[in-house]
Length: 95
Image (spheres, rainbow, N blue to C red):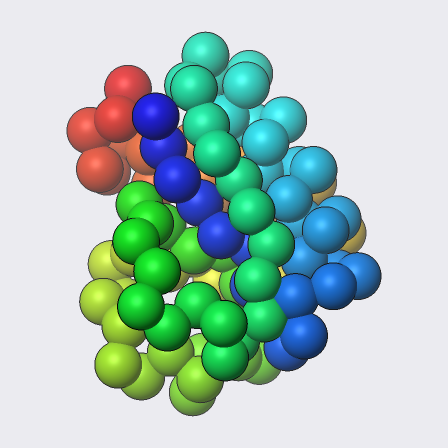
């Protein structure tokens, strides 16, 4: 089971769109997953395999292992999310 957080400033709107795209990418790869949304502040102390967030929030994750973060340009770009999620799960040897 892969645990993923999609993170936006508040953990509402845009992270929900990302959640849909991340879940679809993982399902397409046949990977059992738990994808949750979160705000920047609420991710502290959580366990996860990786985070998907936008590049504008990079400074907010200074204390987080950067190998566990996928930075994207836009939460609405399904193709970008699918490509980067696929790369990350291969890198983490999850497939």
